[in-house]
Amino acid sequence: MKMNPSRTHARAALLALCALVTGPAIAQGWPDKPVTLFVPFPPGGGTDAFARPLSAQLGKQIGKSVVIENRGGAGGTLGATQASRAPKDGYSYFLGAVHHAIAPSVYPKLEYNIEKDFAPISVVAVVPQVVVVNAERVKATTLREFIDLAKREPEKHNYGSAGNGTSHHLAGELFKGLAGVSLQHVPYSGSGPALRDLVGGQIDSMFDGLGSSAAHIRGGRIRALAVASRSRAPGFPNIPTAAEAGLPGYEVATWYALWGVAGAPADAHEKMGAEIAKALATPELVEAWNSQGAVPGPATPKDMAAFVSAEIGRWAKVAKAGNIRID
Image (cartoon, rainbow, N blue to C red; front, side):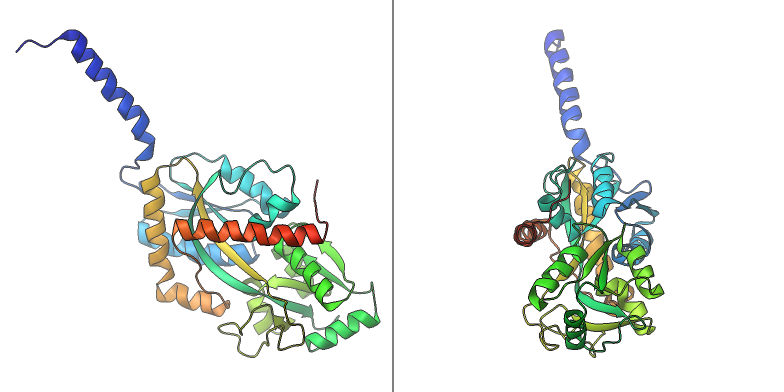
């Protein structure tokens, strides 16, 4: 049968157009090269404490390197901006934190939108925050003693944070309001540097994620006064809750979540989500998470999106109440 040339050309053009449109939505053979994991804080902080074991386990599972790119600064927003501009090929991921649900309320000029420029994969860990003090600088051994000390010596004591507008900062402001005390805020470029100065005795206290403080608490280098959760943390049964220690209503959790870059192949994100679920169920990560007082969070993209949206709303109220904005 004789083919109509014009029809043949039209069919070829249609097939080419379909390939052009659908091509980026399919990640053939994923993964066939290393994966990049953007961590928007310096090494040594809470995000890094989960990124390292997670990336190692993922690397074993997928048979490719998972390379961590630490990009700290501006309360985690610089790293988020860089991650949002990464190639949309299914090989770039972003391990953000509760800070990125706070940022929309305190940074009026963000260069990314956490709900539009990223695709939710899974909340990998939820950790209660903990009130910790340097044992040499602060003689208080209980939360009530620390509050009484701060009231007797207003303006004398301080607390460090991962930066202006981070969860550490807002947790400190929330604590000050509930306890009726005055503490000077000392912002750092990440929780790692702040924690090093706490351990070294340059600052008095922190409202830190339990994950990053855990080793220093166990080592006796800093003293934990209370966890900001309704129940005591796994692996730390001797640390009372804030309510038990005399400050009811003080509940703050630090969470860490994995996003892909919006517009990348959907099936690559689905495969990554499956690998994350598999990794979090391994004995290695279950033990690592327990040692940091952590539990996995909402695992499906839909549940994670709803969770992050609710967190954005919650922290917007705290930021507004404290008049916290960073230009």
